[in-house]
Image (cartoon, rainbow, N blue to C red):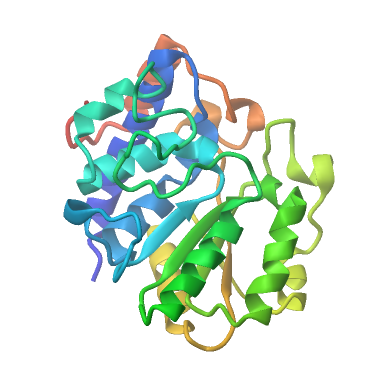
Length: 281
């Protein structure tokens, strides 16, 4: 059984890392990162079968994860570091010249845990489907996970991929949509409404689940259910409701913090709200 208190402590530390990383270079995307913190902590600490000590680009014989919405790199970098992929101290190099921790994940510097460059929205699901098919062809029974944003669903390539996966019975794939109804220019419903996303995915032939991305009990339960449905001939889609900026009161529920760095005073407030620590970088 998962130790929820331990996961909460890790979450507090990751939130601290996010605001400190973005504040230190006055650049980055804290809102979506904070909203997805519980998901990343659950995925890397309880759900995925992965080996931080022996990272291989091909991900053979282990679960692999692809982040399509690459702008929320701060949360991913923090969780990767605390999972043992690279030193936590390297978080201090975020977005700096010659750093492996660029604003959007890249592969040319060989950062363990990162298998594709991402941030050009709409591409991640296609890559994840390809990786899932490769695993099936190689007789590898491990799972592929992919996280997309809700605003990203406005990209045409996403819908091509959504048609392709069920047609080809890509049933070793769990895709998650971070649904916080906030994108850079405003509310998703106002910019370009997605309508009934669940019905649309189901019409394309996906098995659709829903979960609260900021609640560990629900996260772990729904992800376990998703894993139980693998191998059934259809890909799995989870619509994950989150709160933009979760855990930092002045950032919560607004797109204003999609890509804005907090001031020193605001950072201090955010750190006070997330006081549990594993040791800051």
